[in-house]
Length: 91
Image (cartoon, rainbow, N blue to C red; front, side):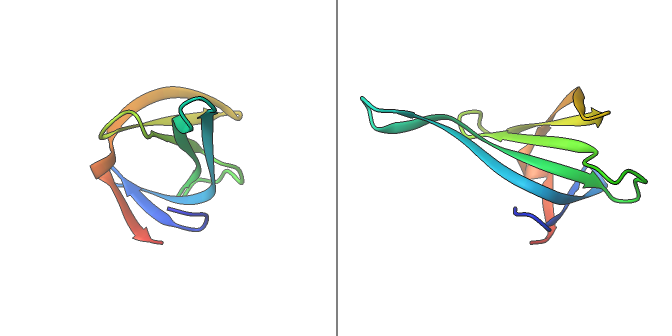
């Protein structure tokens, strides 16, 4: 997924407004850890001009992602979803 992608989660359609990765690096083992991707989403049909949801996909948590509804820019209503339920309509 990237900026401009259209995705579908549980029969709701979203546009990806921004995608940002967050990685930490261990100098001793020379490995990345606690890496995850943040996706700012806008729900199709919403009158909001800003992001309506935040999607987080962690590398170390298999098959699960977390979606938050944004209320006045603050994440709330955290829900677990399965990564397999994220359908990319337009990439």
